[in-house]
Image (cartoon, rainbow, N blue to C red; front, side, top):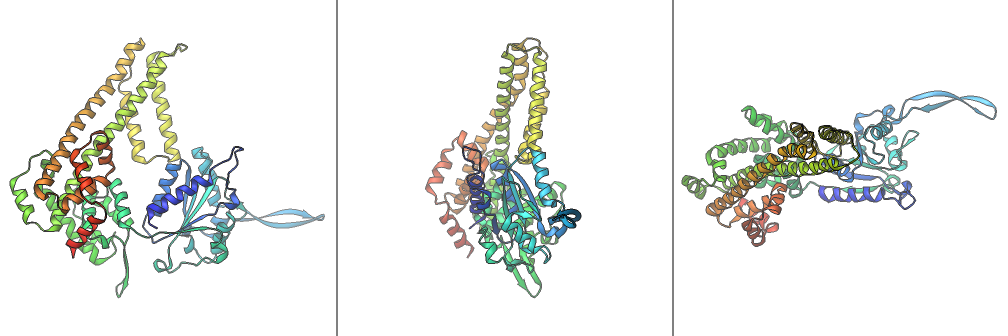
Length: 497
């Protein structure tokens, strides 16, 4: 299965394992909660989906790469104590608590969450001395003499032998006690994730043209060459940073992330072209509805690679614009909810606090909630930063009036500014979307480029949220008329032959 299907299956398993009956006991007892063994090539996102599952299930997560551990850190250190049997005293070897088990208990204290996921990566790549410990862990849910706490679901991940020479096979006894899920790299599924993570448009454009280069592992006379999903994501971050610094990402730099000479050379050349297209086509002007005549002339004679690049440039610019609107919408909605809560406290009769003190208490409460969420890591960093930024902005509108009505009006002034800014951004967003469709129709009609454009919008979370509030007739029309899935890939494959 692909990584998206694996995520859904693991999430369902976590929810099933943590389901309790009316007496508060787990419906599936611990002894029947088989650990999940996730097997797949390196760099396809196994760790990332565990972080997502933990946030979505609102449980804690402890993640370990077991190859970094020795037997002592996994099992615990031995110590000698005395005990009596049949009236005689003996020296007995026992073990301290495993570092991994201790981390689980520490995580429970830090987050206040008593349930979670213990994720152990590269479990079949351990040293010979640690291998028996891993079998004990999978078979008995123990490290040394310490059991994994109840309420913690075990997920282990490993690499197939073709990707790692030090891989060990599991025996039948172990496999009969786990749930094995085999995962394969899938560009289409990763593309959905990549859009949400804002992977650089140049890399997405390149992969749209060369999807076979998404994941490659080859051994030749020069040694092992490989390209993984992790490499594309890490390279994306560097390209963004280099752009801000005005630095080029040449072939040698690209090869540090995409360890395949031909692919690295191809990507580096494409990055240079993509940046050239950015300057040549003037995407910001297109979104304002100001398209130069020579742009259409050039596109009419352009190769398919160049036309796809322009579509991706347009899509990337729209995503930035619509993303700003979505952030402002979340900010406005939260501010409104917080004001409602403040208004409710102002109406409470039994209070000896001034409106200013009540407002300050609200901000302190919100700040404490953000800190708690940060410790528990139940939200992505970007979402948490949005909330923290809003609390700081609300602090600038601390009311000074002594009367509740006047104080609420002072506090609401900031919200009104926020709401007006949202309206302005939404109006600009609607115009940008219409201008984008005007350009696409004039440049490409309803050809394969329009299919690609509509598909990209469908994969874009920001666009889906925006269209839910501001329906776009042309998007709905093209979405219904054009075959997005199989037909889109068939067209691209046909044109690349």
